[in-house]
Length: 350
Image (cartoon, rainbow, N blue to C red; front, side, top):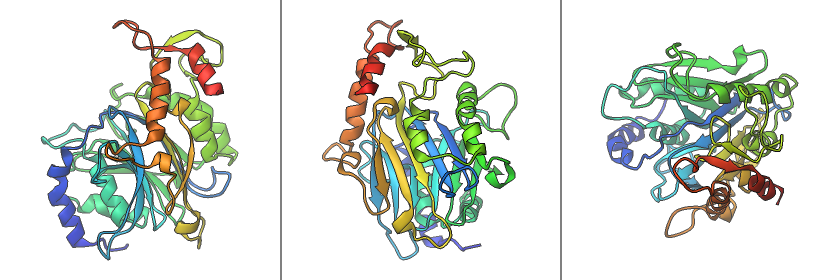
């Protein structure tokens, strides 16, 4: 196992309480990891459909700050001019990470919480492999201040979830799954099985949309961003109100929700490939059903998806969120949660 650099790690730990002040992510998310058996390219893949209280976000590259660190591209909340908290990303070693909040793990035991992005930023800066991430979790002082399902992939083709709370984690490998794919929303398989947590319907819906495709080895980044993140299929209802021609529907446990602010897919590499040449990200900043989709590499981020100054936000996310507001246009406290599906269809067609 690769030894992680000690001094940068200790520095990051000392900074955690300071950087925590910037955390405003109190969201949910729907996510997936897959190894090469499930994907059309044979490459590992991870997907994060991001739900959050943070209104907008952007993509940016973070260069190594010392010899032991790794450059990476991450998704950051609007206003994060320090590039301190990555909510998903990929690095020059072929490693990638994302998370979903989990609400049925052991409760926080300290005043520190919502430190998931701090852990992910550190992982992107120092981890080459899934094993390195496990070592990082083992090494960080406890309590961690996280309640999360961390999904990771690496250049060796590995893909795993780490269901992580303040003091421990449980690891789930795609190698142990017949399809090579695992889905997580906002509960953990290793957590309390008493109905607590959330995202059960999104979990079932994602399986309905993805199981057969993964089993046939046909999973692609475009299907995740352009179809799944824009689907209003509802497993419990057994139908898709958008496709069925409904006029309005209450915002609820669909994969895209009003608080959805990005859809990110990272496609890893094959053995002996150079991550700088072949690792890729398909990114839709902003409300995913109405967001423009960009192809991102470790060396190139389209200007519209990157930060503009002085607000440190992306024009692409702002544009998508402005369109979202046209869909959620009803006024009155009992109406604001309703989606105008007619307008949504028109905007999606454009």
